[in-house]
Length: 378
Image (cartoon, rainbow, N blue to C red; front, side, top):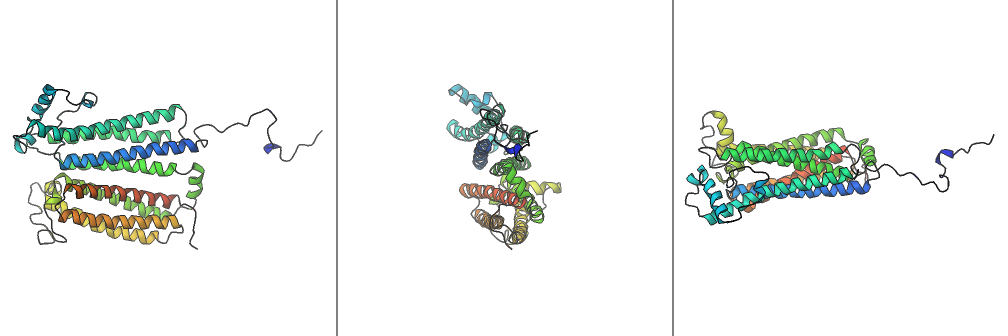
């Protein structure tokens, strides 16, 4: 009986027999991972644009110019003079027109209409980009193993965001309202940052292979990951508080710093009844809370940075350094915005800086969980 070769299991396949390829969608797909990553970054950029257009829509008082929710029919703007007049007539029935914009011309109405229509249209386009991309990768079996449900999440959150957007607008159409409810605006913006976070986290993970992530996880820095998770949650809370400030234009009420109207505490902090309304509708109270929370967030960011400096990995240390730089920059920008009465260009810059800080925190957190090799401190 002939002896079997020791290395028979790894010997070359018989001549003429092709080498089997790994299944598509599992690890073959370094190309698929890169393509999906690029698709997610496109969606990320679109959400950023949505936040910017949404901010400008609010700052220009345009959010209530479209008084109905028509996801399909509303994709087409008024096409003739009669349609424009009918749209304008619907707007003239709400209190924002009667109490704030009475006497507005049709031309002035068209300006605010286009802002709100563009915001909604960008949301529709983003839904199409997500659906087409997901179906493309799914039908071609290019989605990596375990990622199908993950890639469904942005689409589901996007649909929820559309419903919350209308819930927000509907609050401003009620009797006595001339703007949307601030807490609904905060919910809308908060979900936008959740979607941004999901997209950024997934895109950053797809930048590395599954095996590389598994290997890196063995070197995770659990304490640093936990602290950066806390920083992420704290930063999200500050974003929500900032949305409450924006929702009632509280950033324009007190333009001195570090005091408010010459005092540490703003006047009449609890003048509204019932008391809970002050935390949403009293511009002094809302801005004061946002300021104090910002100071505490900055202190915590320094604590996390000091822990990040002790990381064994150079990339992780640098990531937390950039978080601190962005945090300090955001604080300075916030102070400048308040002291100038929150003009549009500074308000939008402050919002964009929040996005940058949010992504940098997520990146630092990812590197604490999945460190990159390189220079290791002994």
